[in-house]
Structures are given as C-alpha cells and as structure tokens.
Amino acid sequence: MKNKSNLFAGTTLQDPYISVVVPVYQNRETLYALFNRLHQVLQSKGFSYEIIFVNDASPDDLLVILEKLARENSQVGVLDLERNIGQNQAVLVGLRYARGTCVVIMDADLQDPPEAIPDLVDKLQEGTAAVFAGRRGQYESPFRLFTSRLFKKLLQLLCGVPEDAGIFVAMNRHTVKCLLGFNTTRPSIVAMIGCTQLPLVSIPVVRAQRPSGISAYSFWRRFKAGLLTIAWVIAWKWFPGFRTSKRCE
Image (cartoon, rainbow, N blue to C red; front, top):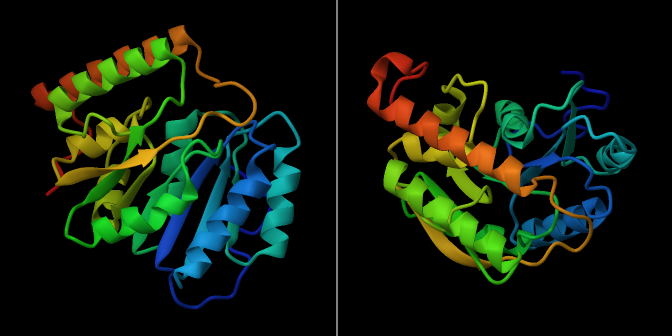
C-alpha cells in the first residue's frame, strides 16, 4: 500500500467521534456530492469526524479528486492502494486507520444516503455492536433484487446478520477490533460481522438508484462471490481447524 497524500491533513489532537470509511473505485462522478453531503450532515449534528477514502487502484483520475479534497478539508484522509484488492479488502485497510468511537462503512456511489448516518449512530448507542442500514426501495432491477434478497436470507440463516443487511453499517470499536482479527484472503464484511456473534440490528433505509455508471459486479461475479462467502461462513462456523481468528467475545 502507498499513501500519496496525508492520511490526516488536520491537526486535531483528540480522536474523532465518527470515522467514515469509504472504498472507492471508478466513482469520480459522485465523490464531490458524497463529501458535501457527509460534511453537511455530520457537521449539522455537531459530530467530530474523519472521512477515510480508500482508493482501490482505480484506473481513472479519481486520486486527483481525492487529494484535492484532502488538501482542502482537514477531516479527509486518503489511502491509495498500489493494486486493486476488491471492495471488502479495501474496507479492512481503511478500518486499520479509523480512529472514531463509532465507525461507519459505506459505498461511494450515493445509493446509500449519508443522511441516515445519525440514525445508525443513535441506534448504536442503545448497546448493540453494529447497526445495518436495512435496504429498502427499488434500487436495482427486479432480478438483481430477488437474487440479492435470496442470498441475504441464506446469510441470515448461516450467521445471524439481518436479512436486509448491506455494507452500509455503523459499528462500535469492539466490533472493528473483531473484524481486524479475521485473517482471510477473501473477506466479506457483512458475513464477518455476522460471525462475530455480537448483537446486531438493522433499521430501514431507502436506497437510491445508481446516479451514474453501472455496478462493477456482473451477475456471475456476484454469484461467485456469494458462493465463496457461504463456503467461508460454513467452514469458519463448523470446522474449528479452519479458523484463523478466535470467536469474538
């Protein structure tokens, strides 16, 4: 991993209350809007915060935009990866640098509204380990929605995550520590959170349709990733010799 711009441009001595970790890959069209909405909602609530963008070796000029945001905003940090490692692995890289009491993970495509973060954080304060933004709305084609919900239902049965869970989630520090304790070459953030065996909830959040571009995940790529995730959960739960991390207590 290389870091072409300062990870934290500001001089804040105290750790922020909220860290937002955002993996980015070919999301140049939504970056400014995402930052502006994050800044507005977090500042309006009086939260101290940092936003960590993880550039997953995007082949476009996305890094130029990220570096400009970091230079102009002390709350922004940029991690620039030398090679593409995938969304979930990029999230884990960002989590290693996150300093907040509450840590939020979200995509950069603006399908998940930054305005939902205060609700996620408020729910987190009730004592749960992680709060997912439960996916609502017609944000994908009917076929993709059906296959996604089928996979999420199976994941719920296997490891206990809410059946509407996605990668938009708020977590406490203990949950972050548990995630970083996993050692797998093919991580799935949602499944890993489920395997911590910690208390999890979701609250309904309406997703928007993708404002620009198309998903990087084709049907077959999604299908393969889903099979690998299910196989990993089964192996981790029922074959102790497979585990490279302890159950999170």
